[in-house]
Amino acid sequence: MVRQHPGNSASPNAAIARALGWYVRKRTGRGDVRIQAYGFDLELPRSSGSLSNFFYFGEAFEWQNINFLRAYLRAGDVVVDVGANVGMLTYAAAQLVGAEGAVHTFEPLPWAVDAIRQNLKRNTLSHVILHPVAVSDSCGSVFFTEDLDVSSHIQWESGQSISTSTVLVP
Image (cartoon, rainbow, N blue to C red):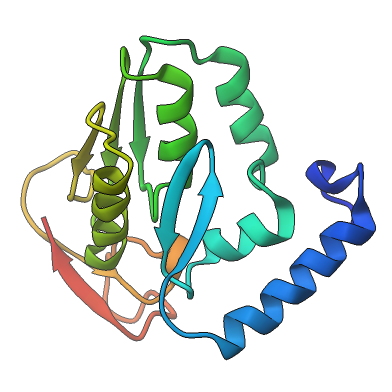
């Protein structure tokens, strides 16, 4: 997958080396990891799937989504990112819309919210508005899986998910 990703087509062997290096670093290191992405200095949880995807596939790891943003967003636009996880699409959008625009980022998981909040502060991204909630058609609270990283979701019924941990979120 690393070799065949469109973002790695120019140098697939270098991409394989980068991915292998990350594979070792992820398992032998500790703490959060600092990277430069979308023009920002980001610190992300080592266990984040988005961070791994960044090392495997580069900034455009979600190839179609990132290229859609790059093709259509302009300075001053307003963007909504629902289910931001650690905020990789948020940071891409923030770069593209600039300080004249706004990015509304919705994420309910406390650990992901903390990562986003720290990165917004570190990069002075005042045009990104963080909403630490799940999105639904009604108000209230809901149990959300917290151990499935980018696949976390609202826990509709007990036993419905492979998750072993949930958290109550607004």
